[in-house]
Amino acid sequence: MNKAFPQVAILGRTNSGKSTLFNRLSETHQAIISPLVNTTRDRNFSDIAWQGKMFTLVDTGGLDSAVTDELGKEIQKQVMLAVKDADVILFLIDGATGILPQDKQLALLVKKINKPTILGINKIDNQKKEKNIDPDFHKLNFSHVAKFSALNGSQTGDLLDLIIKLLPAKHQTLAPKPYTLKLAIIGRPNVGKSSLINAILGEERVIVSKIAHTTRDINDVNFIYKNKHFTLIDTAGIRRKSRVGEWHNKLLGKIEKEGVQATLNTMDKADVVILVLETQSRISAQDQILVQLALEHQKNMILVLNKWDLIEEKEPLTVEKFIEYFHAHLPFAKHVPMIFVSALKKQRVHKILDLALEVEAESKKQISDEELADLLNSIMKKYRPRQKQTVTFGQEKKPLKLHSLKQIRVNPPLFYIRMNKPQNMPTAIKKIIEKEIRERYEFLGVPVKITVGK
Ligand code: GDP
Image (tube, rainbow, N blue to C red):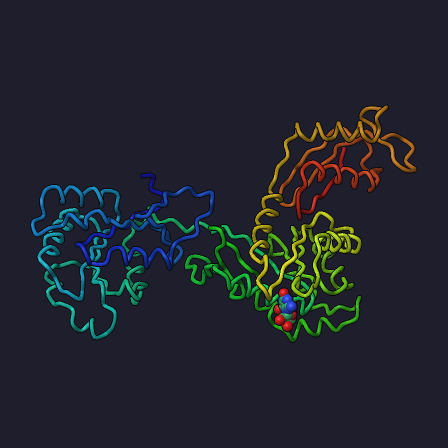
């Protein structure tokens, strides 16, 4: 096995609680691994993060059925195999039943292995049980001892501290920064942002509250959806009604600076901005400003039309009519996908997350030079069929020569046009090129920027 992190193997006889401990530590402290770090994940292996350090916990479950009164050669072989790659051994005994002969035999074997070992006394669920621990455990003579309850998790933090202490220094790897898709939910007051957050988090989502190896803003909420990690940014800011309320009442053009600044700060941290509007009311100037701000800040974006339940008598064409209406009022955001939801009825709420994943993937797309050369060629033919490699537009007298088109950055994508007169490039031509790029490659919800040079 390729060892990405140092290994800690749990050993112990049947019923000592190996699987319970393995599950407890995996469930609460399993590391979020960046998709780039390729580690083996298996039922019996779990990458654990604790205090910024990583290790792989190994459950040597295979021993269970085999351990008998007599530790035969076969079992010894199995134990050796299980701990071959281990850097630390966690030798588990059942603190409730006391020390059994098998424990003593296993203990002798573990000592022979000569690796750092922790004697783990499990099933210490409360103080009473701690008082009743079999004093004979001292006779096993291990220098590192931890008492805990795998079942209720008590004192497992101390156990993890001890494990970290015993891990070989040369192996200690700082936990990789986990990859998480950061979402900012913005919108004017009362469109249903808080309700939407509750609906998103309230469903079957696992909220990852304890991510031991990262420092995070307490206002961020982390959760998992379809095995992907998401972070909702600044949820407290959204829920803080009073301040947003003030902002709401300001006249257009005099929007309270602090409110806008807070929205911008939240937006800037996000990978995808989720702008919430109400389906049942007309688009307001504030909505338009928010869309414009997100576009100016080159953000990936989704428009969420909430309160869909308030629209009565929906017909097959209702959605199209709404899209038409929104496009007419937000003409600069036609590339932004729209989704009609009801936070109240929890309708299509999870689709927002699917869409966010899609938009994020779109923003990381890289189009090859060859494909773009082909696209430029077809643009030339389309707009100036008779004179190859030249484009004229409007008042511009001299023909413009567009030499090449390349994508020089992803997320957000930036395209570079090499041409003869960059200073004279009409915006309209840039717009045409953007339109053609989108027609072929879509870039759903993603800002596409075009720059020119010689
Ligand atoms: P926020 O200010 O954007 O966070 O908005 P809230 O989430 O506090 O919602 C404002 C009001 O709209 C509340 O009375 C919600 O119950 C209501 N609301 C939110 N989402 C929906 C929805 O999908 N349908 C309906 N009918 N009402 C909603």
